[in-house]
Length: 131
Image (cartoon, rainbow, N blue to C red; front, side, top):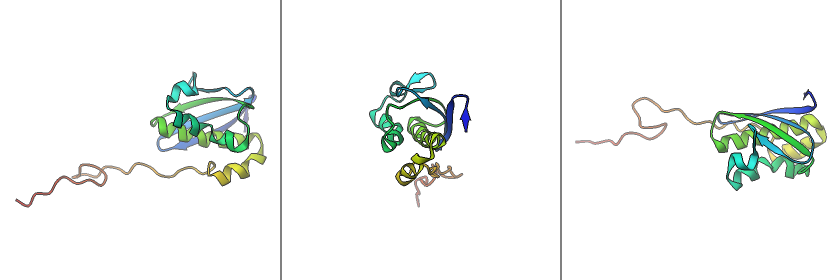
């Protein structure tokens, strides 16, 4: 669904939500007003967010503007990857088969398991002492 002169995609991962807007350009990625490499800091996360562009061979064809909220940096990078894949499909459906086969169109359903009462964590128990 085009928004103004942008194409749009929403991505989610863990508790992070990414609103991704793409338009034809020279390859700039801006996250919350900061260049993506500066925002994420780690090379591994910069690699993750560029995976959909690498698969579709569109690395320097689009300017990308992202609004990220919630979660940590790794979850946000996963959300951005999901949102970027959806935005690319919104722009042109010919990218969909490659993105789907790479697994970028599927929302990762794994979430943190909640901590249970009477325990130290989700699975970890307090140490048991017989005496």
